[in-house]
Length: 336
Image 1 (spheres, rainbow, N blue to C red):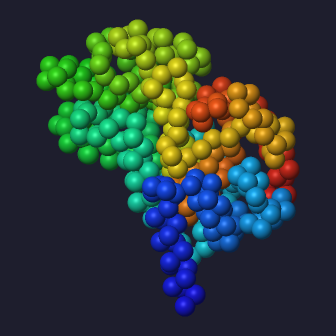
Image 2 (cartoon, rainbow, N blue to C red):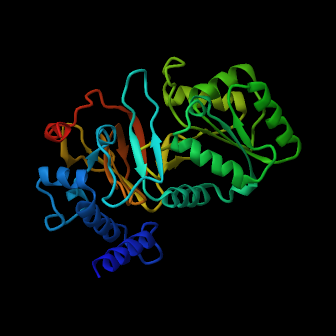
Image 3 (tube, rainbow, N blue to C red):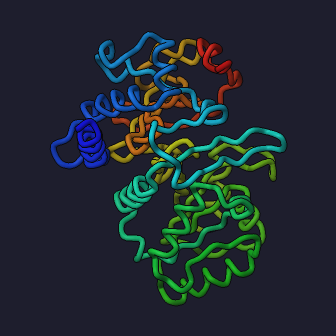
């Protein structure tokens, strides 16, 4: 009987994660919080250390947000589940990567495909080119997994990964342009800049999306400098961006100007950088907390190290990283 009740609850939550018609984000978030408090041990201990339980939580801001650093030091997964897939973050030499133990890979697949269709439509309309050399060097990236699926879904013979062969990328772009195929070029920032210095293909009418980060390969530039350089080189008026991370199963997208928007099952809140349980409200700079309902079997409520500003309409901007990577008040948990 207990097993049947648990199975029924999980099926209900699975059905609600992507907010079917009539579902309230807040109500689903409360149910997910109650489930994860009960079934994700490390998250429950963290909540208990903050004296927060489902009985004491009355608003989204009352829910404790687990620091993403826990994905480096703990296995964040619901009891009774094993990982179908493990995603790992990129790291500098000697650093410990974040590990996301994904109990149900179909939730990730549904999340990125629904979000892509919401922002960009059917993948089959694109020649999908992925310039991700630093990601191709390792096979545990969630971005690589998503890009691989989108390449296959595009069903275009020119779609594919490009490692470091810029001449091949330029040739594929020329072929797609000749065939009047719409191009979607997804690339790690430093590689797009390297390509732009050697080739300046006319990509007007195409979507150019940078994933952020120089990975230690180039001097750090501001977003404005990057987008201006790429826009001029590729003859496009705006550069798109993707905001995601190993610890999340959902992504936010920017169609230009660095303003990101979330799919309906994801939400961003700005907290006080010096007090993790206080919030700064809209239009003010703070550290970011993220709710990702697709993280059903790990933790949907995460505090990250990015600084940003959340606007009244729910969109947000990323302004940089926190200097102090210690989250105040969490030292006890780090010693577990």
